[in-house]
Image (cartoon, rainbow, N blue to C red; front, side):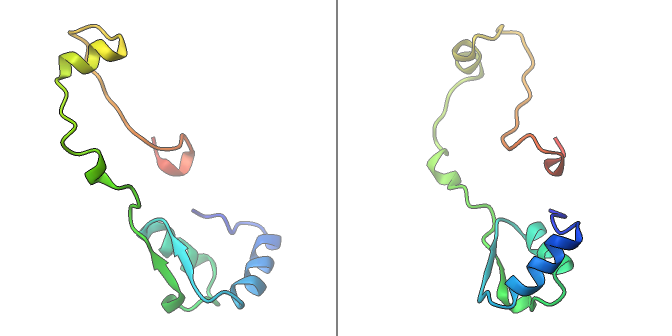
Length: 93
């Protein structure tokens, strides 16, 4: 997100994007950022793949809170918050 900040990147993208048939993004927000940062790219060439994680693969893997905390070595009465993602400012974590 917001990767097209400097003049070199803008110039490179201007010439490179003209030769690209399709741009695949990892989400709608990234698609919008690509279009906003590269006005010469037609919207019809930029596609969002959405969230590419196969959530069904992890569904049905039931485990109790007590068992999960034990597995992680946490006290039984602890409060746990979790997230998955890169620790980057653009992720807002």
